[in-house]
Image 1 (cartoon, rainbow, N blue to C red):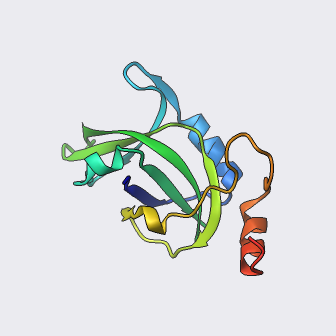
Image 2 (tube, rainbow, N blue to C red):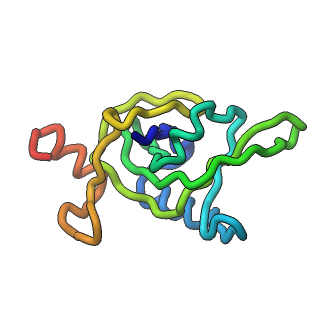
Length: 143
């Protein structure tokens, strides 16, 4: 069963803004294809579990609202000479059913049973809308 990463989308105020930032910083990697990477001081010790279908889930405005598939974790040397890592994702941001979550620094593991479901599955347009609307519908017990 895949393990996931949970991360605060620092400085991001909406799902649309997250999508724009991910696309802006994505690039073609010779080994992995079209990706975006996020640098971290800490390398996940459970990388093997993360790379068997795991995703990076983002928190925006105190709710988990999106994810992107994780494809690689690479070691890197940071600007200060210390070791760190790059978490490489496919630059396809998938909206999730909003789930309240307080922020934190860095990243955390997210168990599959604690991860929110995708808001839109497949190519369906059913349920397409803002995460704020989905969060409101969820609070009313309608989603």
